[in-house]
Amino acid sequence: MAFNVTVKPADHEFEVEDEETVLEAALRQGFAFPYGCRNGACGSCKGKLLSGEVSYGPARPPGLSAEDEAAGLALFCQAVPVDDLEIEVRQIGAARDIVVKTLPCRVARRSLLAPDVIELRLQLPASERLQFLAGQFLDILLKGGDRRSYSLANAPHDDEHLVLHVKKVPGGRFSDAAFNEMKEKALLRIEGPLGSFILDEESERPRLFVGGGTGFAPLKGMIDHLMEQGLEQPIHLFWGARDPEGIYAPEWLREQAEGAGDRFRFTPVLSEAAANEAAGFPAATGWLHDAVLTAYPDLSGFDVYMAGPPPLIHAARKAFTAAGLPEDRLFYDSFEPAAKPETVPG
Image (cartoon, rainbow, N blue to C red):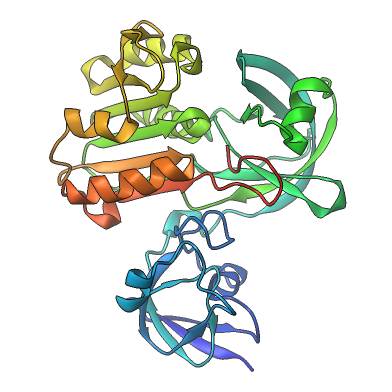
């Protein structure tokens, strides 16, 4: 049995088929909802359930707390309607015209960026182009139906290659191959672009970018895009790593600092090293979100873009909203683990 969903306040309507989730139906019919992992863990697709009921099956998904549910929130990547719904969710208008494609590609270049991070540059066939938005990711399609998701580290204007930063994960099916077996010109299949972690380019608020590890990758794409468009609002990038080797883009960082002047600031944050600098920049130590709040104790006037592992996202969301950041000005991509040992996206 199909149910009708009305999206407030715009009064957009779409139909959800039997056993289909709200997010699946919305994406199938061209409505660009926010989402990330699509497995109920990251919480990116959370919205308000104004009327009607949904089912999550035998257990509430991990990205939806009991407090969230009591407050009328729903996780639309897992929510299956049991009657007609009225919902409220942030629609991502810029992503609506982006076409998701499944394409072959070849590994054009492999470059070691850090002991545990390798850059893959993927070349599409000459007749193909992948249109994407800064911050989105793509899936590597593996034999047997498995897939691994990696953020695009390049901006849309710089699309000669699709650039991925792959972190080495012990036992990771794809990352082990990328480090140990893969050769240049190796053939891969990809699906993308995916995800709704994209810039609000209409905002006039200063932006903070907060990345843990290879969470730097989508932030780099976003910053490159802003620089290409002509940076107007100031930005401050906080990049967390265990030690200085984890800040693996020193030349790029220096180029941004020199090219944008006081409109671009960078703070490396080291969690397990007493070093006082990284990549030539003065470094903070400790937790990444604490370093942000030390620099900006009041976040009420900022937009924050954040990417990295779930512990970072969960801790920072709570701390940043407590520091005055409006929930709708926090944009994040949580690199949730895959079913098998691997890190996704990123």
